[in-house]
Image (tube, rainbow, N blue to C red; front, top):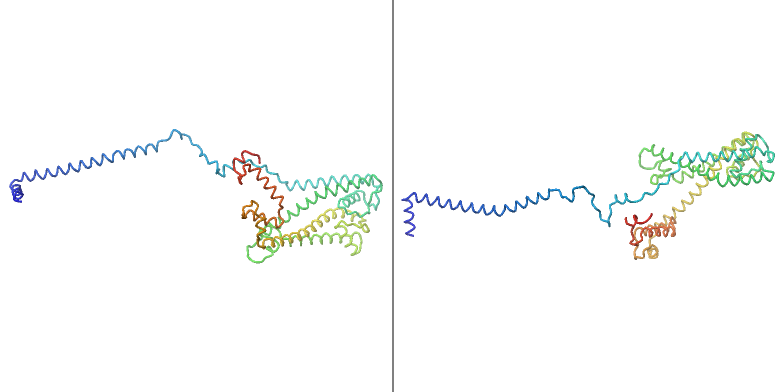
Amino acid sequence: MFSFLLLLSAMEDEPFLTTTTTTTLTSQRADFHLQSSKSFDDVTAPRAARNAEIQEHLSRPSPFHSKKKKLSRCKTAPALVSMRDLKPKTPEVPKPQSSSIIRQGMCLLAMYLCVGVAIYSFNRDNFSGIETHPLVDALYFCIVTMCTIGYGDIAPLTPLTKVFACVFVLVGFGFIDILLSGLVNFVLDVQENMILTGLQMGATGREGFSARNYIVDVVKGRMRIRLKVGLALGVVVLCIGIGCLVLYFVEGLDLVDSIYLSVMSVTTVGYGDRAFKTLPGRLFAAIWLLFSTLMVARAFLYLAEARINRRHRRMANKVLQREITVEDLLAADINHTGFISKSEYVIFKLKEMGKIQEKDVLQICDQFRKLDPSDCGKITLPHLLGGTL
């Protein structure tokens, strides 16, 4: 302690010693900091250099990827776009155009009538009946024969004309009527689409009950059965009414006989006790019978379809409301897994409704097995590429 006090007093007496000591301590401290900073730089400098080298390597383009290439997709899960590109396109079946259907029907009808008129015109003496005009009588005979009415007012007499009548009836009933029925169906479908389009364009958008909702099934996009039945009945009444008026005013029949002959004509019964005898009447009958018989037949077909559809709807509602049982579970379990999936349940209900048959399901399953040769339960892209659809 005494020596420390002597040192302090000496330093006060010698200022140069104090300055030198302070400078020495300061320089030693600076050297220490410099060495510390140098050692830190020595540690961090290589790390920074390595980071810079890594960044330069990542930014450098790889020689293996000098060109852009598509990524290779996994074979077990191909992209949907690739499947669409690789799947062979199914050739589309061209739909028949409306003009071609009408043109074909009219051409065949004209050919049929021309052949019949020509044969009748050259063999008028071989046919019995009241004659008015050769062309009108021939056209009237062809239409009555084709529509299978058979009034009997004009009939063949010789064996040759009888053979001609047999061939004419078979050709007309088996081919021309089918073609004209298809033409009538097409015209009716076009009219239905026009009615639906007009009602949709004229809809006011108001909710609740309306005439549009009563006659059109908005959900299914079609005319309701009640409207089809009403139109069918209206067509029948219209055809009978037009024929009744002509028979009453042109043929000179009374009201009862006019209605009687009109009904017997449009229904193709044709007892033969009444028939058209005048020239205007036969000319009218040649046009009226051609359209009225087909339209009335289609109208009664609508009535039959309405009854069948009503029965199918009742059966479908009954099937949907019935609860599933254990027997149903066993019957619907196609894969024998002890449970039924959504697809199996749908197939089971469709079979109960009568919309599909068991043989239809088996045919579809056989087609699926052809597309799945490995029996893995699914169709993959290699199977489609390796086999023919």
